[in-house]
Amino acid sequence: MSRITERSLAATIDHAILKPELTRVDVDAELDIAAEWKVFSVCVRPSDIAYAVHRLEGTGVAVGTVIGFPHGTTSTAAKVAEVRQALADGATEFDMVINIGRLRSGAEFDDEVVQDIAAVVEAASGHVTKVILETALLDDEQIARGSRLTERGGADFVKTSTGFAGGGATAAHVRLMGENVGDGVQVKASGGVRSYADALAMLDAGATRLGTSGSAVILGEARRVDAGEESTGAVDAASY
Image (cartoon, rainbow, N blue to C red; front, side, top):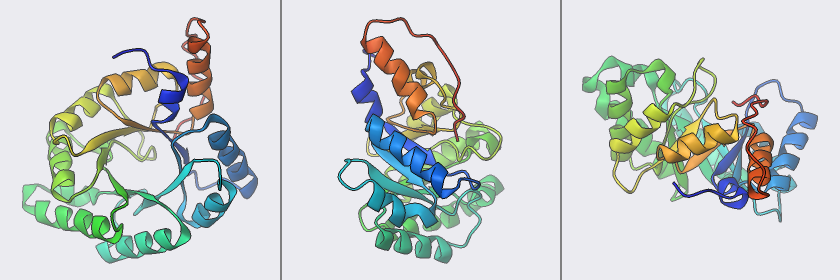
């Protein structure tokens, strides 16, 4: 992979603002980070969508949200309702959690998993939909199958993790996911992407989008590299 610049790296980042304990002051600070570093988007809690759209107006930063988060166990009807409300509030991208239990139950439940994904994709009305597998809870066969089911459901991305299940993205899982989808489906690495080195490793493995709350650390390091300084390899951000 050729060297990536600060600006091209920022264009891959969905800045995560998802922790349940965040206050409005905390959210404001995170939205300011997203605007300052000109990341691709923020991924916010559903209740923060309208506020984030207003605060980020004119910055060029898109607003996305999560659906069925973080467990994926809400009904398909509930996920569809979440998407419709999120669209009304101004969100343009949707990161849905797959029905993890159904995926883990075996191939005989694949049609249910696909129907859940397809309903969310349809409700999104052409907007970008990403399917979170929660790789920390899956074995390699389930990750591969979940990736294929994501493609069958019509989603745009397959995504590693919520960041709330005790594990996050690995380069091996990103590669495995990419190997099991066609060119029309991209891979998003999220959870544990805390440093410039982490970001480069995920992109090198085939991810085209990164989910992280450590955008300032990652892009600050990229800026130093752009300026000709050596990477410090610092890891001092808590990613979702």
